[in-house]
Length: 397
Image 1: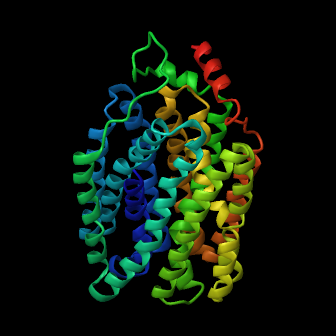
Image 2 (image 1 turned 180 degrees about the horizontal axis):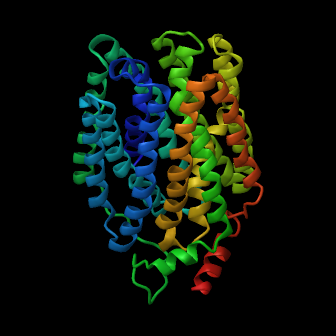
Image 3 (image 1 turned 90 degrees about the horizontal axis):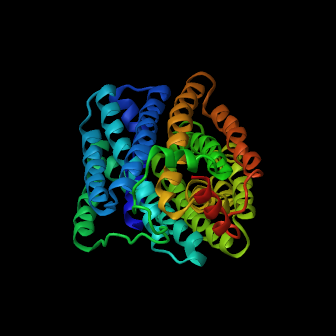
């Protein structure tokens, strides 16, 4: 599951390290580059809620996961074959449609297979793995692109997904459903059940937080970081790749330490710590754009903030509903975050970059990410009250 999660984000964000070359080759501006990422986010959001909902109904996660891994891997190949903005855009839409449902499928599987006192840590491990892949991918892609061109970089990262699909078919076991009340059909979810899930305050808050998290951290910071370092910091593409890789390594720490910390204290406190530090994550790039050592030091200090993703997207909404609704509860924040935050965020960030410069984009990003902390104050603790929350939602049906 960890490797699948890592490949999803390597395929999604690896291309941003090639933006300087792609922009020259296909004659694209910042807004168009942002639109290619917005296309991923829009397709990702709709794919997450539709296919994760279907997975709750049909119950067979293994077959669906194999198919999705194959589709998003092939779509990366199509991105490398694109010769125009429209061609690249369509390839990215296909990638987003396949990757969107992959994430909640992976995380719901992890939650099903985890003991209660390890759910926070185990849910953070796949995200930490994605950070590891994001640390390796920039260096690999830039090395390949520098020598053979950006297209070959995308061709190469297609191969691991095909291999992983084969391993899933051979070794993955269908996860067992747990804690499903007697008399209910396992995995049989109706739209009425979605309305029940939406009665949870935590699910609503997670959906709102996801808008600002995806819009600020993913659609803006992660998308434009390599381009910002080259255009504003005036560093080489290789140096920018090293910075992005270090940022990925620090994300590993955040996504392991913070969910583990939430198992020791509580979810809300851990989330507020992460969201506060995450709010400051654009600061190293604004303050030290061309002073790489100081930038790396600041990124290290703020690394714990990278754990925000697992908390607001998976752990808290997943623990706020009965077990049979986990995939749906996790898909909703993904859907709203990607469709609203991801789609609007990349376009606005690119537009700001074209008209006011990417430094202004990063400054505005601080305010966007800061809303995750403000909204997080309204969370109801789940780690200590999980059983009570499940009982209340079951009674509400």
